[in-house]
Length: 317
Length: 269
Image (cartoon, rainbow over all chains, first blue to last red; front, side):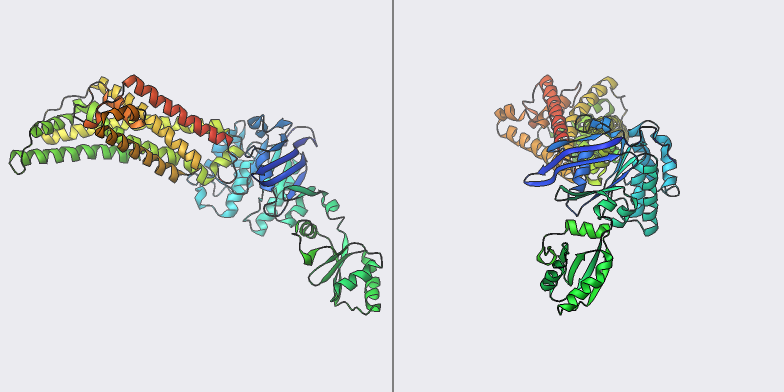
């Protein structure tokens, strides 16, 4: 186990204000404000090209923001980059190490770069990430999962206050994914802040205290999982032929949140109103093939928030 | 790579010795007609292969091999960091861009020093081998003159190292760095040579390039080669050559730093 960081609990370890990045005419990140505190895991969600990796790049000083600031432990990354990054361990989406060096030697090289007590952490981290047996093997011989583990190990060499993980479970089998989830929870328990960018919504739901959903560079939702999923709001999936008429009937019952789907309607309503909805449709001569009660998951909300505009999925109200 | 270069230096000594010796025998036996002064020139070339002349012929061989070697090695040393994505990894772990470039330049400079030492030792070895084959008594090498020539040789490698580094940083590719570096090396040297052979006045222009200034420093070493070279006419002054080569090194590395510093590092480098 790594030593817990002896600092203020809940201290803000990462704060961005109005972060903007434009590549020519394309705005990759558009006025992003985010905050990560010690002891919490913040999920950064968004579809491909949403700006997650660009945001991480700006936080690490790899990409120069067009506007706005990123501060790590109160240090502006643009002004005091090297100083700010002493408190950060980051694993990028593509894990890259020297292919001709062993996993251990790669970690040693980074530990020398990091200084401090990083060298002493090399072997414990190899053990912690399940790489002790293959630590002496060349990196080029590693499987994708082993590369990911080595990448995660490298983030912890500096005993960081902030850990940034970009798709850490890529290439890991289910058991490996579970181990990574446990590890992320441990990192938060050690009073580190964790920023997790992931496509695995189940993983995010399991480990994140808060999530930020971005789309085309803009923050479109944020909060705890319960807040973002509206407390797992219940809805009914109604399979029905005449969608427009069904929607009209249901709106007459006071139901406001109705969305068209390819097979019918998704209707947000209390679970006990199922019979009432069914009766109203039937009394108007509309017989639903199915009325299925469901609860919103993070995946549902994510899809709803990030789906491209299309006639079949547009709200009916 | 260093071993290959060292073997190549020895091999060139043997090839030159065997080829000149064969021509000399052919002239002496009447197999080929003798040109006026030809036999004397060939004997002069054979004398240049002796250990006491390593500061001339030997250093010129090492210079030619070294320029190519340093371009290939520098472009690989820097370019692979972008290809492997390790540049991005290093930056993400807190390395500075300036520190990265400084570390690369320093390690390349050390590598060039090791190369010059081994190359010169290989040339001395080659000279002893051909002297032994010729059955002549070897005169010991002039260490002072060789040290002076080696120092100049080392200095002339630096602008090529900086050039290859710049191209590799700019293109983020080892292959592009090697290819473009070698094209510049061979083309610039060839064009300079051709222009001067057409009209000596062109020397005023091409003497601002790399190859002519390298030639001035190498040929200006104490006891440098005495083999006549028509393309060496009008070479710049040694002091000026040193300043121009130094300026190229500084400018190339500064441009590399500027590019490295100003660029967004997205994928790879």
